[in-house]
Image (cartoon, rainbow, N blue to C red; front, side):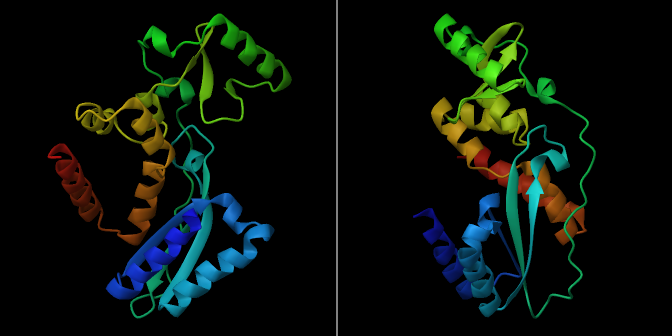
Length: 219
């Protein structure tokens, strides 16, 4: 199972002893039903020599117009932790979904008449601008028609820049894979705010980001 990946990560942490380790998972990990598993995660990190700080964070609180809640666990090695770490405060949301949409979308992303009627029927039962029929695809209303979000729009809604998307598209990464990458990612702006709390010297963050993008462009 995917949960087994934690123990692979734990072995790496125990071997490499990084100063800080960050884990992310769905909000449900903090529920009563998952308490036993969550306790194992926290206790394992504690035994590995780390103080753990955790919080359910929402991408919508850090500049992204989507409600995407994830539990973030920040583990700081005990020999260097001074107990002062605090999660970043939320910031006002100054954009909306419409700001993330492309101006010119190919016809292939628009729904057929039959699928459109299905979405309208769903919306009558579940009012709202975004229609999600329980699957992975989100449908939006665009100038009176319904369509799927484009891969670039998915990336924008995760806090990536258009240039980040272009690196992948220009290297032949398929739309399907880009959709999956966006869905498996962590909201970038949320991470940036988190990193700035961990590393007040923001020049280090900017340097690391530039180096990472440079590596991607050379792939």
